[in-house]
Image 1 (cartoon, helix red, strand yellow):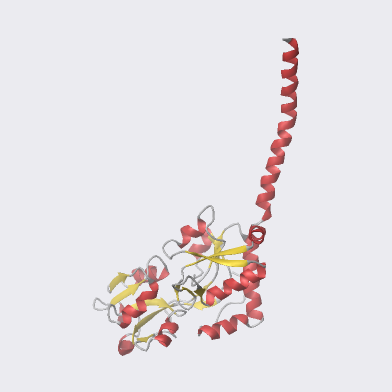
Image 2 (cartoon, rainbow, N blue to C red):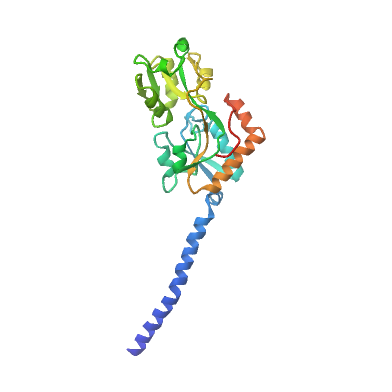
Length: 280
């Protein structure tokens, strides 16, 4: 019995001495994992996961076969190239964008494609510096282009306004068009054709999106394109705590500005080049 007691005592001593070291070792592993950073995680995975809505020509659009194209898609490609990894796109939507960015475990590493830099977003997430000028404007039928010269001309009961749900377009319309008839249509890419067909009169959109539809559909016009209601910039969105990835994104955008890549993309997609050159 005494021998058994002695063995148990010795075992307790060993555990007392060893457990702190084991726990410390575990803590160090956790700390190393946390300190590894987002960039290391992406490079080890070998793929940059990019969240995008795929409904916002010409910035991000998903074709029926699943392929993506657009200005933002090409910017994402440059970021993946800078990281030395492949790229894969993950679908998101304007109503769920913030929740999808913040979800744990993460759905994707960053989000791109028509995402305006705002103080509200920067309170809870990280945003890159701007790579494309942006602002609210309208699409309407070309036959009625002379009808709209200001917000006051749109904010009338007889004017039927259509917007996509959950984003800044809907927020802007609800705040500024309190007298017009407002319809929220679930698919952003369908709205221009609905306007052209007379299903509504005006689409609240962006100066980045409107020129594409004017160019591709002669029934449409953007009479206030050069006098947008708001002014801003589009950037890349990601979770807080990913400062190492933000640094790579900003350096990529800066390089694209410096070497002319960004300007060539603006020209390719018929978009304005006026963006800031300083980090946000």
